[in-house]
Image (cartoon, rainbow over all chains, first blue to last red; front, side, top):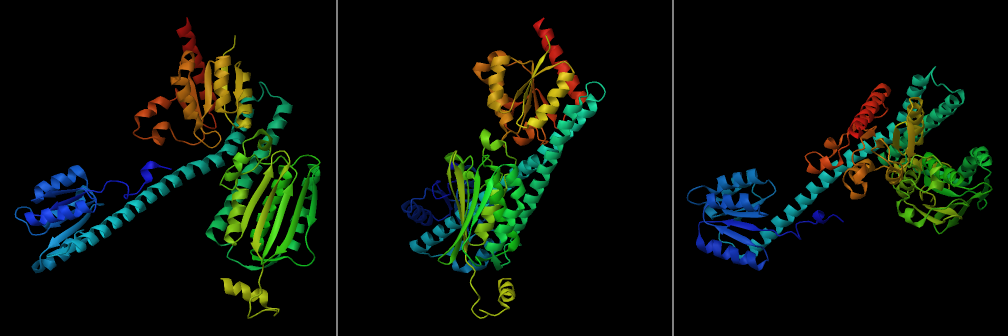
Length: 394
Length: 137
């Protein structure tokens, strides 16, 4: 996506060789050229460093024992120019100690003389690979920091928006007092303020749930949960809301328990989200149908509505944080933009999957696949099965 | 004729509050709930001042609008309309894009924070419209 995100494999990686020995410069240059690496060679430290500063190579190969500026000094100067440059030092047998010292001051590796072309190639490849990884990590870190910063700005905006609306209403009401007060407007604004307070409460509640799901605290618990009990409970709690919207609720489950392994709270949040959405984005006279089935080691729950549907272009973003469909039809419903994101997180953490099918104007169906509950083998059939499972999973 | 203020903001509650406030002070208030709608309204209604929300639909759309109004050819005759940028996030364009020469391209005439300080807003509107009138004379 981002052209600058391409790693060093595509960028030209140049190598600078600094050695007072002509034969050494010549053969290193030749081997590197064969590897497809542009190489520049220099016979003393001062000229080599000037080239390093100008060209910012990927790697510098430097002889430790040279007249004039010592290799050791060159090593320490290179990292002042760019700490990401990989330094390989060349040394005679007699100066292994110096090589170790050079590595302590930042060299990546050393090549004892004499060395074969293969040894040089190996060390160069390893060094460049290491540099790519380091650059990649650095880029990743920068991206993360940027993302976090943007995210903080975004969240504070989300939290402030309702607060600002409330504040502005109250401020204007106070300002208008006496001069242009209008009781009907005052009442309407107070109602709006209450709505916005609720919005803020929902946002904070969803935010907390998300933080807990992300922290893994809620989903880690794996107990035996019967969806044939949980879901009817949720449906019952929304009877009044659905009736107010003239939406009917239907429930089709097989007889007997429909068991999954999970956290009761999370499962409630999950189906609560899907069912409220199905009511909220429905049409008067519409229907919400929750059906369940056991199928080959998993449990499949479908929450279907006969509502406004989701245009295809929005579907890829549906489960993203703070995403909300921007069509006029959907805009009327309030929401935090976190519900489906949280739902997906919960399902994923439980090892399941969630998918959506939708037809604009006709309705949407969210289908959740969850791994079915399996009795722990040792404790199978024992009345302590549930207790054992909790301990096992912690 | 009363001065026209165009409110571009995606929060209908914020618009409702500011609209009533400004109307009670004799302004004519036009509303737009998106940047696109706002630009359209500039062309059609030629407002005297624009109150522009920075973050709409979760992006910093306000900057794009400012740029359009100040630099795009089709808005050439509206270039002088003062833009008051409004945001709840305390971040000026200079903070958001540090050291970018392009910041000047998206710089509004004023930068105000939400919730609006009412006496200050009324004073600034009066100044801006007064100044425009002097130019016209």
